[in-house]
Length: 117
Image 1 (cartoon, helix red, strand yellow):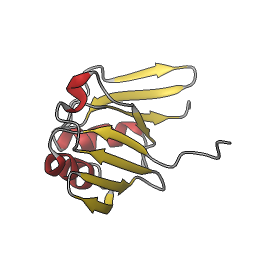
Image 2 (cartoon, rainbow, N blue to C red):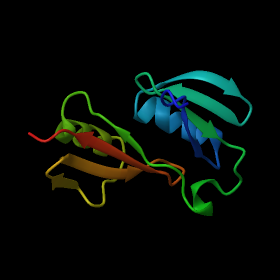
Image 3 (spheres, one colour):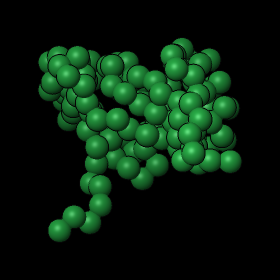
Image 4 (cartoon, rainbow, N blue to C red):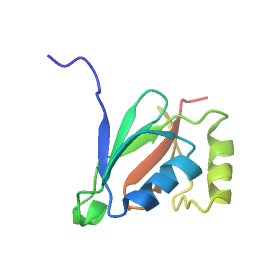
């Protein structure tokens, strides 16, 4: 029986670079570290950073993690742009909400999602 999400993990080539991005760029706190493995708390969801994958996301990609911004999508995109994060497709509008897609330092796909207005 499935009760919910235990964690999500993403392959990373460089654990230090990945931790720096998730902690200092996105603002999440690390909760566990064991060599090339680390976990961060993303608002109640544990995200595992698996540095045991030598090719990282380049080996075919990892999961897509979607985050909900605190102060609105536009403000979050502007803030992350200021920290060097690129949103190549900008913000896309859909019936089901607004999305801004970006990548972490390891090439994994990430998104910001906002409910429709």
